[in-house]
Figure 1 (cartoon, rainbow, N blue to C red):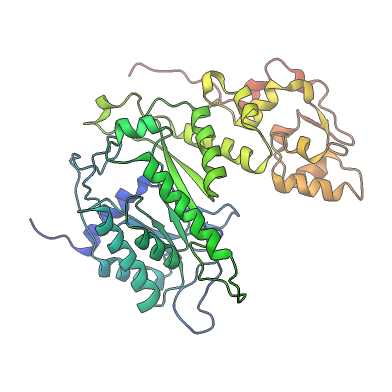
Figure 2: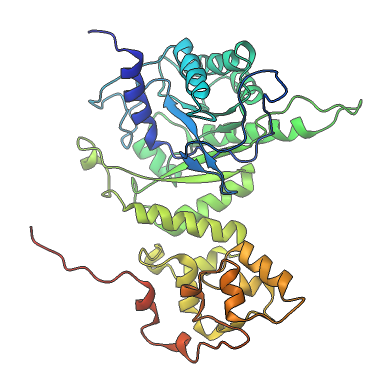
Length: 411
């Protein structure tokens, strides 16, 4: 078989990496080369490949080292039994691509994952060699996110954390039973142990020694994980419960949700068809409410019929419609926790409201200028010169927010 060129490998392995969602780069220590030392930067803006939580556009070279894999996870397009085109980068090829792409201003950093080749240790060893060469030989200071392998030797994960900005270990599926059924070579207990080890190493790296010196940083941008949704029968509340436990147990920066794409020769072995991407989007919105808007899981559950989020409207709006007796709220007197529950109000908008109303009484136009989505909020708030006049009690209020029905066709 003829060997592939570097461009051909890049086409295969960048496409194969699209199934991995965990690639935001906020939270890392700032490093740049404006002092004339080294190459690259892990801050700034470039080509938008993903969004950080602070809104920055992050450009990353996102590739697999290889899509060869010895595992046979039913939901994975790159599993050993899958009939897909295969390719493999050498260590030097990944280093060259990263440096070349950065010098052309295409990227700000690297997101590197891989299928398992030969063994977890061999795969992790090659990935660490890539990052070591970038840091020590190329003096690359850009952002690096490394997808680690839970079965790899602890010393390899230790070195990976010293070299990369962020580590991630995938929990794969929402429940242990699903992992055992659809990814039999993977061990949920080992995955959790590896995540706990990363958490512990990060904590130790922040402790000062008796001399007052801190040890070398370990994964300064934290760790994240990914949950595949739709490959098993877990509903949205089960997924969100799992995510809540993961955040609390492992100090995660982010849980990423990846909608399962059906694989033709494996679909008969899976219980569900592919969920719409809208489901993935709603899970992110609910996750955001739990983390930044002081919502509790039982409040999300109030508006999740059958355990699944409403696909037509966002979770906060669904909650507000289920609790119309609490609205409208007065933007000039309502406390912060109540304002955070108003549809169309973000955290920044609420902070602006709280700051500005100390000095003057707010009108409808003021709230609109503060960045609120008044198309959603107008039915749920009152302000100087504005009252919804029973709009919040309109029987068909939900219909004004939900997308219009579509006529289905037979052909």
